[in-house]
Image 1 (cartoon, helix red, strand yellow):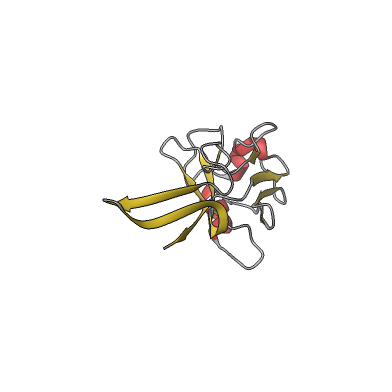
Image 2 (cartoon, rainbow, N blue to C red):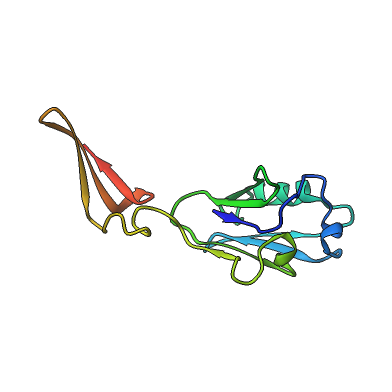
Length: 145
C-alpha cells in the first residue's frame, strides 16, 4: 500500500490546482507494469483514479482511492509487488522523494515467518490443513491438504 502525504484531496480536486500542467504525468508501477496518467485540461482526482483503476492490458496491477483524510492511496493487487509512484511531479499528490517506493508487506517481509516454514491447523488431534509459507501461487503461502 502506498499512501500519499497530501491530505484533503477530493474527487473534484483539479490537477491544475495542485500544480500540474497539461501534459504532465503521474505514473504508478507494480514492479512489472506501469500505468501513466497524462494531465489534460480540467482533469481532477476522479480522472486520475479512473486511469489508475482502468486495469487495461499492460497497466500496473493496482487500485487507487482516497482514504478518509483525502490522501491518495494506491494498493497492489497482491502482497508481493513493490508499488512505485512517479512522473513529472509526484510530490504534488504526496509521493515525493522518500515516499515514492513501497515494498510489499507480508509475513515473510515482516520476518514473522521464514521461507518454507509451515503452520499446521488441527481440529482436536487431527491435522486438517498445512500452510507452507513462501511457496506456490498465493501471496506468502501455499495451502495443501
